Image (tube, rainbow, N blue to C red; front, side, top):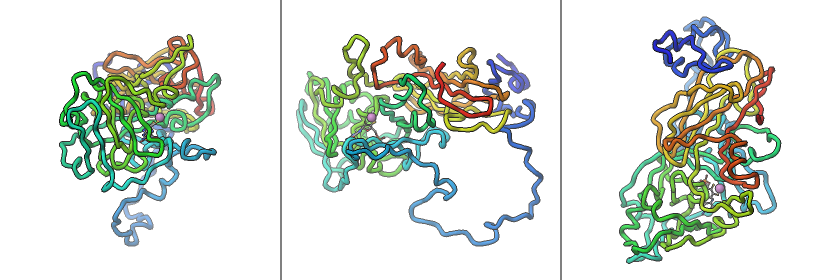
Length: 426
Ligand SMILES: Nc1nc2c(c(=O)[nH]1)N[C@H]1C(S)=C(S)[C@@H](COP(=O)(O)O)O[C@H]1N2
Ligand SMILES: [Mo]
C-alpha cells in the first residue's frame, strides 16, 4: 500500500492502467501525465468577454422547478407499447446520465401491473386487519400525525438485468440493461408502530399487503421484516410520493425485491402463513435446474454496475478517465467495490462516496488511464455480510440457466480499440 501522497499520484494499482483511488483527492492529477478525459488544456480566458446571457435580464422565479432545456434528453426509457398497455407498463432510470446516489423523482423507474391509479387522498384508507386485537382503518390525515423516519434506500425490480441471462450479449446502455433500479430519500411511518397499535396475535407470522390499483397487486411479507425496518412511505425526496411510485401511500421493505414494495397501499392483513398470491407463485419465483422453484427469495444480494464508461458510450481518446458506478445490497451496507480493467485478471479497490447507507445505492469511483487498447471493465461489490457479487458463470453454476429473476452477475463492458463501449461476456 502506498504511504504518502506522491506514491498515490503515480502508482498503478492493478493491470491495464487502474490508478489508486486517492489520486483525485491527493491532487496529483498533473503527475499522471497529460490529458484528463482527453480534454485539451483550457484556453486563457478574458474576464471582460461577457456571454450573451450576461447582457440581458434572466427569467423570473417559478412555482415548480424545471431543469435546463439543455438537459431534456435525459429521460426514462419507456417500455415499447404492447397490446395490453397498462399491464406491460414500465420505464427505466437512465443510470448512465446521473451522478451521486439519489434518483430524481421524475426519473425514478416505474413498473405498473395495471396502470397508475388516480387516488384521491381524502378518500383513501389503509385497512389493518386479520390476526390483530383491534382492526384499524386510517385516513391519510390520521397517518400524517404518526412519528416518521427518513431513510435512503434503493428499489430494484427483481427482473432487472435479466438481459445478462441471454446466451449472447444484448447491446444497450447501463439504464436499458439495469435501470429497473432507483434510490430515494424516503420518509414515512415505521410499520411496527401501527402493528403495535393494532395488537398482534402471538401466533401471527406473515402479512399480506395489497395495493389500490386495478391489479390489487399483493404480496406476503414476513412479520419479522415488517417489524424490523418496513416503512409506510408518504414522501419521496422531500415531496409527496409521486402517483407512479405509489401516491399517497406505499409500503417500503428495504432491500427486498421491488415487487414486494406494494404501491397505493390500501390493506394489510396479518396472517400465520404466506397468502400465496399470483406475484409470489407464478411470478417472481425462479425455476431451478431440477425443475423445482425457488420462492420468497426476497432479499436482493450484492450487485454493482459501472455507469461511466458504459454501454453505447464512446471514449474520447486515450488518457485519464474517472470510472464511476453504483453498488448496492439488500442485506446491508456496501463495504467494498473492486474494479478490473483487464477482464478480471487484476482488481483495484474503488473509493466509496459517503455516507454509505444500508440497503442504498452507493457511488464508487476510480481513476483509470486508458492506453487506447481493447479493455474489459468490470466491477464487483461486497456487502457487510461478506457476500461477493458473482460472475455469470458462478450464477449459472449455482442456480442453473432457467431462472428469470434476481440476476446480480458482474456486468462486463468491452472497450474496443476505437473506444466503443459494448456489453461483452468473458
Ligand atoms: N400496487 C402495486 N404495487 C406495485 C406494483 C404494481 O403494479 N402495483 N409493481 C411492483 C413492482 S413489480 C415493482 S418492481 C415496484 C416498482 O416500483 P416503482 O414503480 O415505484 O419503481 O413496485 C411494485 N409495487
Ligand atoms: Mo418488478
